[in-house]
Image 1: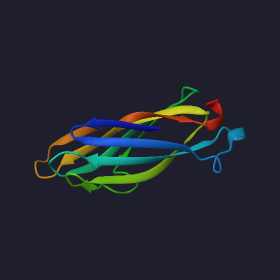
Image 2 (image 1 turned 135 degrees about the vertical axis):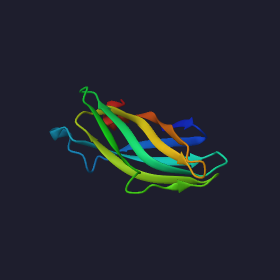
Image 3 (image 1 turned 60 degrees about the vertical axis):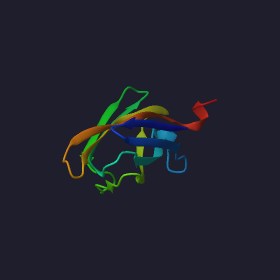
Length: 129
């Protein structure tokens, strides 16, 4: 399933996958990858500056991750263009969710704004049955 949110003319779409070959459920270590596409559907260029993620698992463990850019980059996304990347997270449980925000700046005007990262589910496949 693809989860999508649009804020300030920036569309963020996320698709998560369970990485069974990297996980060790017996040790409560479940690895999920997620693919993110950030589309600039506005008229001006924008640059991603920072990220703020919240990661929640079914054991009620809430982690927050703050940092500059995404995977070591602060991409400038021109009007009508997109940036995509892949990352991962681990959960102690079999079910969880992630959501957050990106901080952007409009190139030219210098206006800062936040963009919603849609909440998406992280579920090991055998829990879906």
